[in-house]
Every structure is written in structure tokens, then in C-alpha cells.
Image 1 (cartoon, rainbow, N blue to C red):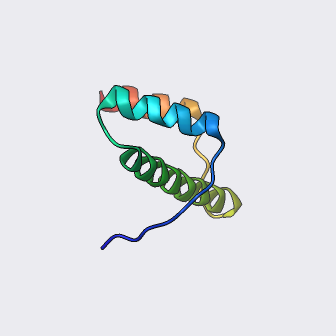
Image 2: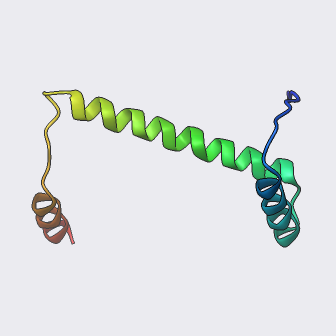
Length: 74
């Protein structure tokens, strides 16, 4: 099921969106939906990272430990 929304956006952004749509042979709606999906995914990742940073029981792994583990498993 889809729903319709309406937004106001600066003309320069809409012009850029139109350029991308033409260059990729996709419509503006496609790109707007992809941008929203990307934003939501990135936001979720940010929230997880912030939760982990504030959790004192979550072990912090140094870059050196990661490198060592990658070398061992290679």
C-alpha cells in the first residue's frame, strides 16, 4: 500500500533531483524513496552505535585487536 505525501523543497534541490532522475532513467519518486530508506537505515545504525557507546558492559575493541583478529583468521 502506498500513500501520498507533499513536501516543499528548495528549487535547487529539486533541479538536482530532476537531473539525477534523467541521468538514471528513473523518476523522482524512486530517488526520494531511496533517499528516505537510506536516511532511516543510517539513523537506525547511529542509534545502535550511541546505545552501545553508553552501555558500560559493551566491550570496546581497539583497532589493533581487530587487525590481529583479521590476520589470524586470514
